[in-house]
Image (cartoon, rainbow, N blue to C red; front, side, top):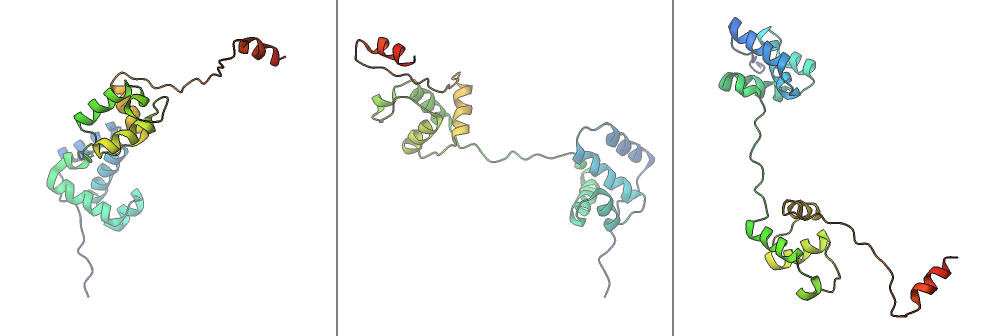
Length: 171
């Protein structure tokens, strides 16, 4: 039963080898450097399993790298970042967030004396159906010019002699 076909990069020209070596030396990206190394090792006649052992990657990753270089050339060795997941927060959500933070939570029917990022996230989730993390809410507040601080709690009393009693009780 024959094994898998051997996979090697096509024969490279001296200019292509110089280009790979230059990118290998100059790049700041570890992934790009590893990809250059893979192609150069394949060009030197190393097999996929040998290359995988040298660069400490799986065989499939080595094969993908070689094939990508074959199709895309040197650009195929550089990282390709996707656009990522679309953001949850709409422009309308952010406007509502910035409007809500300017209001007293009690005026909105909430039993809160001040806003926290988590309280804002919960409040807006019920109104918009969009659930954001506390961290993301803080991010949008910061973008909107808000810099949340922890509330400073203080004791107060309607007793007119409270200040005097407080200072003497610390003794």
